[in-house]
Every structure is written in C-alpha cells, then in structure tokens.
Image 1 (cartoon, helix red, strand yellow):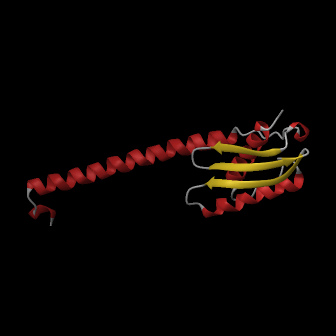
Image 2 (cartoon, helix red, strand yellow):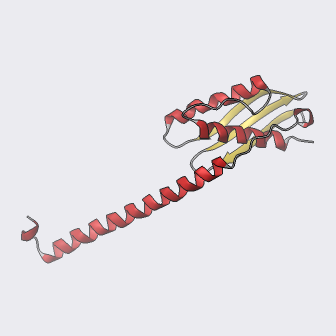
Image 3 (cartoon, one colour):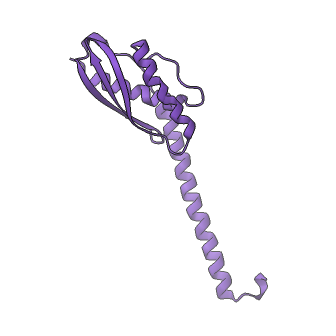
Length: 142
C-alpha cells in the first residue's frame, strides 16, 4: 500500500510521524526530569515539630510544593495544642491512592507532633502534607 502513494503523500506521513516522535520525546524527557526533581525534593524533607508552646493561637496556613505533589493546609492552634488540621488542597495528579495520605492530618492532631506514620503506598504525599503542616506551624511562631 505504501508503494502506491505519491512521494508527496509519503513525505507528509513521514513528517507527521517524525513530529509525533519528537513531541513524544520532548514530553517523555520532561516527565523524567520532573520525576527526578520530585524525588530529590521529597528525599530532602526533614520534619521537625516546632515548639508548640511558641506557636501563637490562631489558624495558620502552610503550603508545600514538590512538583508532582503539593499540599495546602490550615492548622488551628489553641494554647499550644493543635486542635485541627484541614487540608485545603492536595494536588497529586491522577493517582487516587495518594488521597489516602490525607489521614496524616488527623494523626498529627492526635499525636501533637509531626512524627506520625506515613501511609504505605502514599508515602511521598504523606511527607508533602506533613511538610505543609510544619510550614504552617512555623508561620505562627512568636
């Protein structure tokens, strides 16, 4: 069938295929770079619970962005006690299992520190949420 086509038609087909391969290669390379950066950012997270007695009463907002996963939280502190953590945004792409990581917010309230178990299968999302909580608490330090 390819033999019966004109040279112009063959050239168009080859050009379209070449363009498709180039575009696919570009986006594939971009994804590899983003994944590498994401893994590096998550591996560098060092959680440290701030001294809660130094965190002013109020609602403190925190954010953390790790390229493929990000989280926004509101942390309520009253008399040095974390009374509530609300995840206002948890962007994890289309990976539904990452949503399971949101339970770490409740674990922080129960434990009153950031050293809680992460969720198996959603460890990176758990760490991103915990880092957002730490950032919120740090913004309320006096």
